[in-house]
Length: 261
Image (cartoon, rainbow, N blue to C red):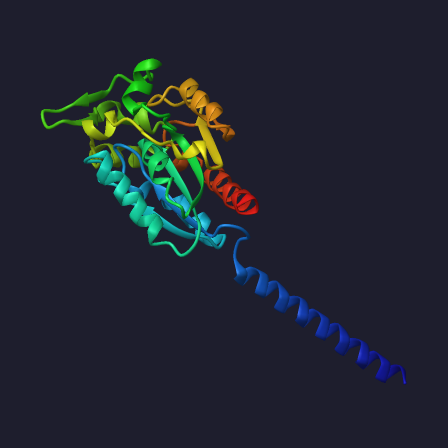
């Protein structure tokens, strides 16, 4: 009798364990709660490859990620590129911008599919402002931004690491310097007309060691956007040197915006 009871108990335990395992697998397969789509937008002098570490974390956590590749040839083309990435997504989107990418998402974020905006050391511009006007109002530490005869702006290669990417490996910052994507004067001086952060929930990461945008300007833009704000001790490319923190902020936006959507 005891033997039969023991077998029945063992079977019950195994069935319970199996059901628990199945439930765990189903939950894992379901992916993240909340918004499941993220569009990442790079800024000036860079391309989408810098988002690789962040994208890997987000995908591992179950998000669908699109890395937009705005050409930096004009603001209109850059916004068009970001909006195309948003429109290609199936469902609501969190749009994320770094640096000049912030100017892009400020307008592309008006797309009805965008539920939240995340700025990573980025230009959260108000109506009538441009990246240039923010830089002139409270100048950045770097003096290495130079125009060429074609209406494009570059960072002098010898100053690129110190002024743009001081906290990533030297081999990486060197390659970024020699492969940088120049930004057009049109993109840099375009004045925003309808800031999406005025109507949509916003998050912001301040890079406290930023030499490309004055950190106090980042704090100002975050505050007036009523953004949920975090600060990291990082260079301008905070999303590259602190990918875990960047991904965490993006996921917080995805979860929170879905609750309030």
